[in-house]
Length: 144
Image (tube, rainbow, N blue to C red; front, side, top):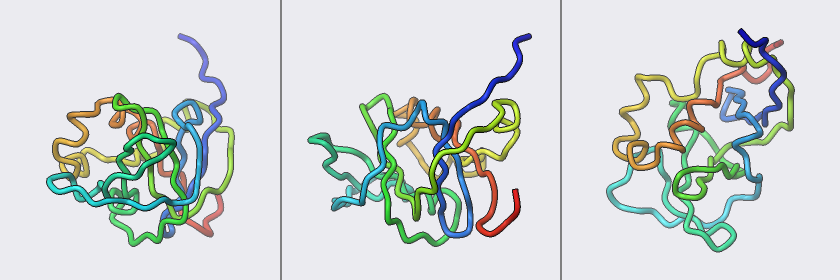
């Protein structure tokens, strides 16, 4: 069995929750752009934004976690459809985690919260895999 190695992850904050997503999934971070609501999508999807010329679904990470958020940043990630944007309160920077230790942290999308997405995750399996790789790594102000 191969030893777990280091994983670089982008740290973000939503409300009082800190999350991490492996950098391999991240395209870029940017200021929020205008979002056009779309009927018939999950409550976790705010709508579509045009990012670098592509219609991009914007996922409300606060809704996933059940916390009130005031997004000030988008984190674009790779998905089957090309890309998706995660709306977060703050991007905190990069951190290195042990792969096994990061995998032991609670997932951003728990099985109980999967149903919240409805067919959105069924249509875009890669987005689900990216969100599944994201982890809750602590609470704001907590000592890690």
